[in-house]
Length: 182
Image (cartoon, rainbow, N blue to C red; front, side, top):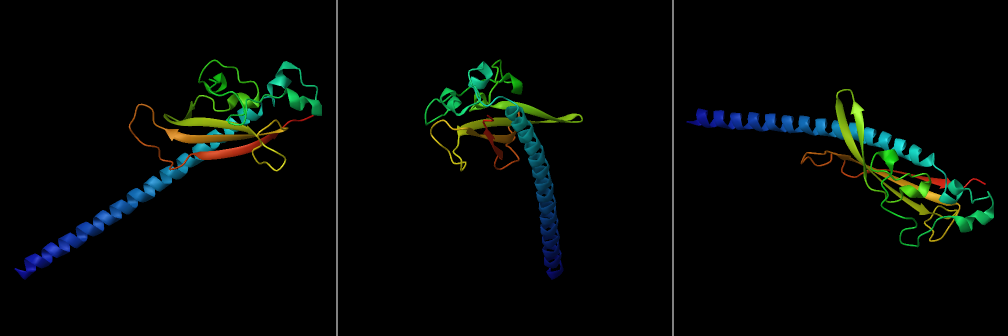
């Protein structure tokens, strides 16, 4: 009888050990996947930022009404202190619609873009959201027109047609300040 109990106890210890090893292995795999997805998301954020930074500073520059002087400040777009710029555009550069986003603030709170990241035969999708605000010379949000706009890009992994939740616990965020060159 005591040998049977000892055998059962030994079996329970071995089973517990095996389960702990398996859980540790799964944790390491999940952490590795999160790290790789974070690198892909950071690359997607950088790509999005470069697309945005390649645009003109403001619609006044695109229209040709800006003259390259301090007086241009009054010509810059400004919708008010809540949202400095118009929102909800479907920027075709991100494949979300037909809106021509030809200046930096056109991307402010645009429709969420879903961008593929292709790796051989596999593809991971990322949701991209952008916010643009005026900032002062110390890069603090400023409720008014300035010669500086802060662009913040947030990227989160997405799994369309799946109930899978994102691997990234928080979105990858990249922020840059774009200044008017005159």
